[in-house]
Length: 413
Image 1: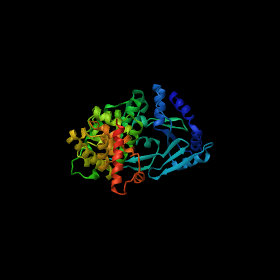
Image 2: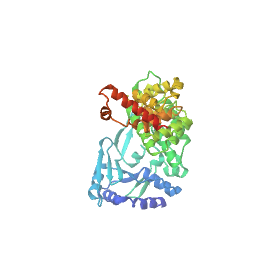
Image 3: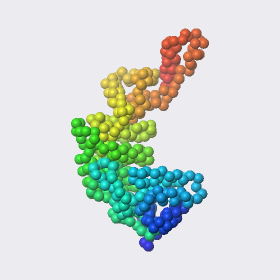
Image 4: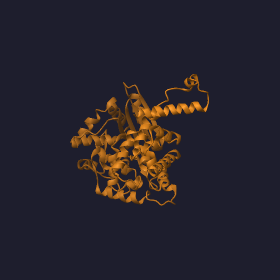
């Protein structure tokens, strides 16, 4: 057994809840191959080769040449000393999510994928470990360790790429089949400090800039399959939550594949400031990335942006133009006038966040309204005014509003 095989075996035996021994027992009893694959193996190898520990162990990818559900049920039946062990099945790809306490184990039956049309979800059929590895995105994620024979599967020289800190797509149509892979490439470049290979970069540039993202206004929405739109938005949501989004967008810009999202993005200090702000504000990253796209409708169509979010984008553009065209007027606004402007126009909070992220002359009053002004009350209620001699009716409402505005203006002194 090689040094790397011995190292991986020793590390896998340390998996919590005795899960390695349970899988090994199942493998022997049923004469079926089970392998650990994906990010956990990759990060163990990075730790071994570069002495860098990237892994935050919360999930594990398991591959079986057989029934994923059968293995999950076996683990659940035989695991001990755990309070929680839940199984969730996904029939479409014969995969199972096994949640053991705070550990998530994704078990997949080995499968082969066929992309009938670029960007659509693939058709699948049962297969073996070798074939399953061919459907993966990068060579560094296509390394598997089969636990019964202690065998490493490395069909695409992923270990060599780990040594060279290089990101290599698996085949010539990787990006054509699933353009969201370039997002994952940027994510790994940021997380692992690896570089995209020249061959993979050339492929990415070609397909991203030729299909399907460069389109004319009269091309149909069907040009943009919903499956790929969902994958792109999921990748962006994960990046926004867990990663350095500015650096990742920077890679897309540097690699000249930013048109995957919005070709009008300009990677300047204003844009990067806005990215930081939209994350601080827990705003909508997708809307921030699309806010200045042109033509807006086509960009929204390609990502299947819902009606409510499209309305927010148009509202943002409307008020951005209003502020731009009447700058002198709004420069003189008091805090209460800003409050009245925002509330009487019923501006959506996500629109407010986009206007804050935009920077410029008026981001502060929007920021103060979001976090201060809108929470300030008049100091009295209607009943108190009636007791003071006010008559019921519209006048009380106006007086409460006047008192609130006064409180807002005083808060800014």
